[in-house]
Length: 283
Image (cartoon, rainbow, N blue to C red; front, side, top):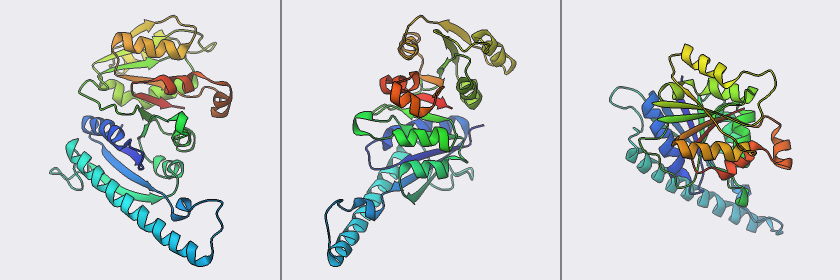
C-alpha cells in the first residue's frame, strides 16, 4: 500500500520532474508526498585547498550560511508553486489529510535518503547523471541503505494521464525482480494494462513468466506475456517498452552487487543510462 512518498530534492534543476511524478501517484493512491530539501552544509561550500586565517574563514562561513539560506528559500518557493500546479495541498486539505509536506535536512542527499527513506513506501529520484557524477550515490542509498522501491524519473519528463496506465514488468525470475513485483503491486493493480516482458537468459530453477502471470491472476490482475529477443537485455527491455507503448517499467535492480555492475557494467546501469521513460526499481 502506497501511503508515504519521499521526494528528496536539491538545487539541481530536477525538482519539477520528480514532484510531478510523485503527485500523479499520490493522487492515484491517496498518499502523502514528503518533500525533503537536502541542504548543503556551510563547510561543504567553502573553497578547498586554500589556506585561510581565522577572520577570513569566519567571514566565508557566514557568507556560505547566507547563501544556503537564500537557496533554501528560493527552492521552497519553487516547491510550493509546483505543488499547487500539480494539485497538491500544503498542510491540511479539505478532507483533513496532509497531501504534501516540506522539510529540510542538512547533509548529502544520499544520507538524507537513507534516513528518511526507510519508513517511506516509495522514493522518487531524478535519473542519475553519470557525466556530472550526480545522483548515483542517492540511487544506491535508496536501494541498498533504505531498502525501498525507487522511482527513477528522466530529466524534463512531465507525466501525463498515461503515466502508470500501461505497466511493463521486466521478468527474469531473479530475487530482485520478485521484490520489484511485490513492491509494485498497488501500482500494477491500478494500471489499465500490464505486460510481462521476458527474454534472454533467466536464472536456473526460477519462476517463469507464466508463474508470474498466475501470481497476478490470484490478485485479480490481468496481464499478458511479451517475449523479446535481444542479446542485450537492457536494450531489449527498453525497445520493447517503446514498441508496446508502456509508460512505466518495473525491474529488479542489481542482481549482482552494485560495485560489480559499476566496474564491469550490468543490465541495471545500462537501463538507467539509456532510459527516457520512468522506471520503478527494487533490489
